[in-house]
Image (cartoon, rainbow, N blue to C red):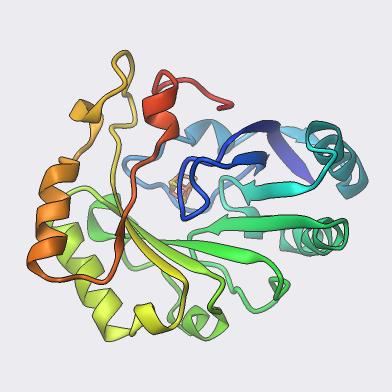
Length: 227
Ligand code: SF4
């Protein structure tokens, strides 16, 4: 498999935010989101076997816990990442998979928590979610929308209602987009939508969704990688 990095940090997003987690970051992505902060994953990385990856995960977190498979788009390496996820589950880890939902999800092992980042219009990749993937979502999964504008908010709100997301998954999360070149101060000035504004839109619509902040951007210097 082509791997960019494996490291331990705190989970920064989703309902697992704040918990220790080992991140396995795979190389390659077929999308080009305008605010992407992971462009360094698009090329390169080093080849590792699933066994080598599992050994490194075990070294970083020998007593189990959370492992997130992320990227890039991890499902571009589906043939190898599916057995890896099976193996991590069998070893007792809670496995999270971060994906855009552009690739088919039906072969993802049922024990994996899928965190599906449905792209909104301002990402430049707005029509990429594969609608058939709705049938692969389970009550353990989460759906996230990264919001850069009022237009993105309305897209997310309407998508949540149109597909009854609240009854399909455990969490629906709206998260302000972060400026991809953010550096220096660890505060909301780097958000493309002020979290207070987003909260007010959600409250005005009584939206049954969670406001999410990428807490790693507030804990560590925002341009830092591997945290
Ligand atoms: S899907 Fe993720 S890694 Fe790929 S371009 Fe979008 S934000 Fe970046």
